[in-house]
Image 1 (cartoon, rainbow over the protein chains, first blue to last red):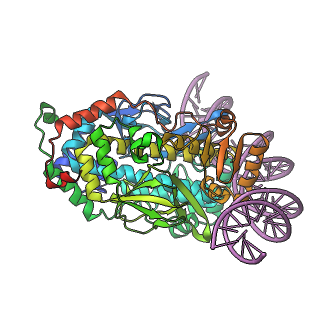
Image 2: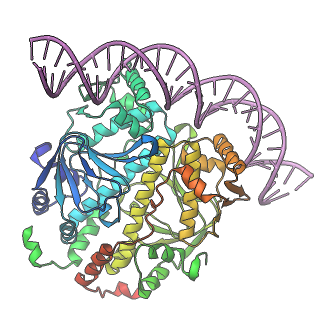
Image 3: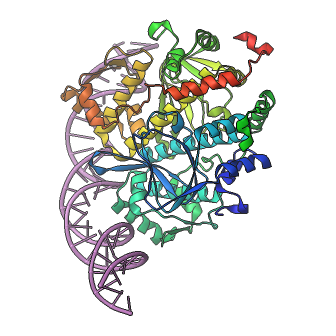
Length: 268
Length: 268
DNA sequence: CGAGGAATTGAGTAGGTTCAAGGCCGGTGG
DNA sequence: CCACCGGCCTTGAACCTACTCAATTCCTCG
């Protein structure tokens, strides 16, 4: 298993948002049991598709992107192990972007009805999912700020730091070193730059002893300096400090809500 | 009242997402009864604040933004009548951005507990709020694409079209004409440009008979051409076609869930 | 009528792009 | 085991979009 303490990355991620009971963990692990393997570059969903399932990425890496006329591409977000997509989809008529794997990946598809059932019956899990979606919103806000008002150096410092933070959160970083299976063109399409310019900036980072990046392995040699260059608000990922009030809220939910005892509940 | 058919803009907006019963409408109107007036440029919330309430913008206009070192600013989104902010906030520890009015505005503050109560008791309203949050996510994705991969002309065409679409949806557009109380600097800080360059692009639009913009009134004289220039996917706002499955889902919720009969419910 | 913010215009500059060519590296097939 | 191939990285040079700085005019509002 890829993640720390032997837990699945999905559990690892959701645990950051709400304290899960052993039973919650059991349910989550049960949901992700049937893991589908995909090769690198496989299309998971395409713009225009009708979303049909809820997915959890268990292994590997994927990205959400939009293709523009003239062949331009904008990458929206990267999915790392433990990430799911997308709570949104299952209410939308039609995907407004596509999703594709970067490396060989494992994907757990969960039926929409089951997701709803779990959310209703296990408020802590629902809370964690909700919170996770909010964290994603916060990341999108940061992305907008970066694209709008930071230069190429800041953009790259930002994305590299973000990757390390995120992979740490699911136990997939060794200190300041991660596996980063992206091409410079991928980074460019994420940050609104060209591959050529990404290359030059990375050269600069290497010259300044800020990073090493070779064989798809990234090491931040000077995390502090990179953070400074990026201009990031340090806590933007909201990964820490679950507010007490949230827990109280969801405990209330558990208290108010009757236990369901339908036949369906037996599968958990 | 600002909006079509005499309904509050909040009701007008949520009606796009889920068919609301008369009782739902009554509840929503009740929530927004105490409307606080704010002058132009008033700070509603500041970065670092602990979010304390749920707000609905009833009149006027506001924007969410981040300030960067060296005095740069990135505007994240604009709030128009009917918009609320933020379902997210009430779970987060700390605001990661600020909110400020642009013109004199009316704001209805709703206690967090009441919001939760309403969501639990009136699933259609909960659904509409949820959906609305998803639409906002979709808008953020479009923003990222625009900032990352479109040039200044496309960016401006995009933001002008978006404003017209959004204001139409709450009945505040006359054909292709709207009130747009933004300075060129505001537009620049939204699109990752400078005010000077925004000015020049707008000059070009005027020369090409695409728009008129004076006295804070915008008219799109050639909507089709602007859409083409913007390169937007036409349906990205997801304002139409509530999928059947969504309604079914929330009807199930109503059926499963017991009616609450607490004292609190009397206030609706 | 005066003041301050906003819009406009010009000139020079810079950050990032475009185009093009060459080198590296890992994988594949003979 | 080697040669070839394709994708990716790297580098150079010219170019261009958008920025910066600065001055002027226009509006709006008190």
